[in-house]
Image (cartoon, rainbow, N blue to C red; front, side, top):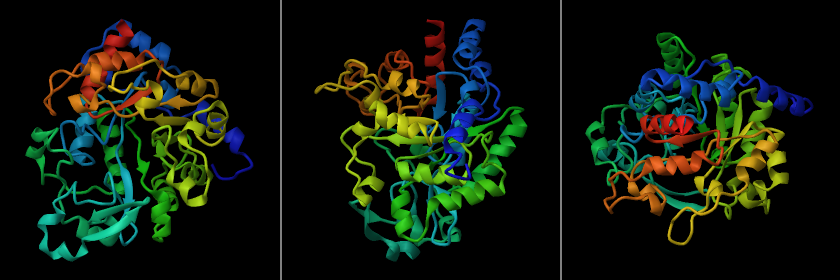
Length: 388
């Protein structure tokens, strides 16, 4: 939205009119029954985000359980599997001001940069949100230089099969993703949704590379900065979402980490609040004044005990719904190490556990959607849930 004065009205309007999307491809891809489709319609209703099938299945960094994350290959596969939304873009800037899609600005773990002797001198140690980090950083490369690199699997110990695709795809830019979104929407005859995240906005503002204005400029150029645009913007820094709220009319989501953590923008400004404060009713009401949803870690929805087993759900879902906020928690993954202990099978790091059981537990809390590295599994779990 454009001004602070109409913030409350604009927020309400966006909740009612968050886009104009038809139902996602999940039903068609999986052959969902009429009962399942009816249940989806009951749970969704209306247009935009609230009109998508629910629980909404969001391809986390694409279908990153099967392809190296944040590549056009991972994004494409997520769509082909039927994901309702693709998290196409963790946005970080280049030295010359372009926005590219990488999970972190440090790219040593997600590209073949270490194999490029011409960039050996770019390896540095920096303080990233208070953490000493050594590697290669996007802000030290021009876009042309980054385009000479190729993406690699980030967690090969858990996903050795993904290493088959190392080197196949380059680093996509945000503009390339928006063009891909348009192309896929035309090809599929339905609106494709994306869900980019602004990474470390306070850090990059300090580097002279502010993200919010760059994102707004690119969205405006492509006429996707409006309240019916199928682009959901998210960030772990509430002040970044507040800044975006004044620049664009897109649906906005505040990401929430562990209860005892503090968003880095709060650390930098001396704001003493933690995530535990933000998820109290007063904190959620404040978020609802400038955002349409929250993306909490799954542990904020159902905590784990000391042994890693799920316990009793919190009141976060009902508390957020009372103030009109959607909940899209993160991240469901099939592999044992990423599942609650009581849903693991065996001890192999790359073996799949009882992920369908875990989905049932989380869906039963009333969440509106979930980020998943395995969209096909998420869609089957939703089919089970809505027909159960």
